[in-house]
Length: 153
Picture 1 (tube, one colour):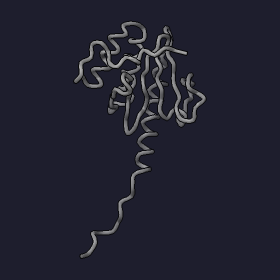
Picture 2: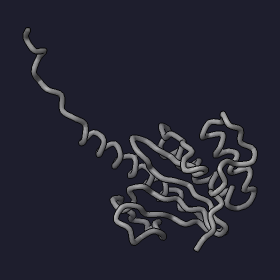
Picture 3: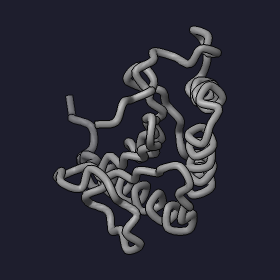
Picture 4: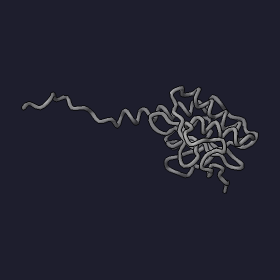
């Protein structure tokens, strides 16, 4: 089992009023090794794939990227950087990026290990697919407004 480094409540450099983006910056700086470099790289790719992505900081120290719902989390462990897609089981993965959490009905993850090359084109396609799924689900579940006018007195 991998030991999480995300158990820390906040990066050492973080201050109480820091934004999620600042907390993610601090986590990357704090890691100061291949894990920080990998987290920084996937973060850039996520932002390139979806310029409207929202960065969040949840569960006492986990970077989260959202757009009309959660896209993925970026957890760091001793031997891996894990990008977990909230609705990964519903996404097409023609490049076979998912290599972790394959047994569940909802999530799927990509574990990046030291020295792994990131298939940037495939990762961006997966991010865009996750955003498309979130936005299609959101628009499909919106309540339909009544066509009736206001009630008469």
